[in-house]
Image 1 (cartoon, helix red, strand yellow):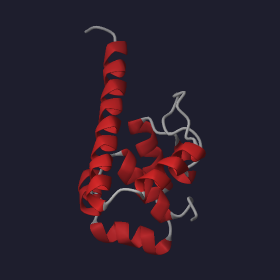
Image 2 (cartoon, one colour):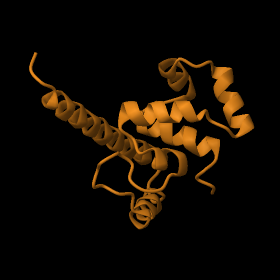
Image 3 (cartoon, helix red, strand yellow):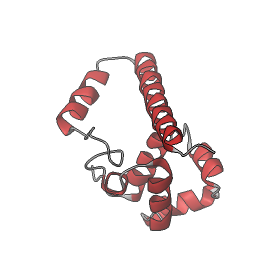
Length: 128
């Protein structure tokens, strides 16, 4: 599978920003649903959108565009393709319901991580 297709980039955006559907993504990013479909059809996602998401959510632009390297900017946690493959292999052992439960836990972990980043940013702000 090519990790550099527009569809792969869109999927990484959806996962990183915890969008549950294309509709939710379009609503939150304020884009038309047809626009998203055109990106997939043309295999092209606007670079400016990716840069904006990278900056606002502290995601590595390299990871967002290629799926390689660190997910977060300035973060010591690197993607580990061996670990990712092991997780993927293990999830196939579970039924659909169990996979959904695992996904919920992973999304909650990601939400908590993003909240921790936000708290650190707020703590770093100078007092008013």
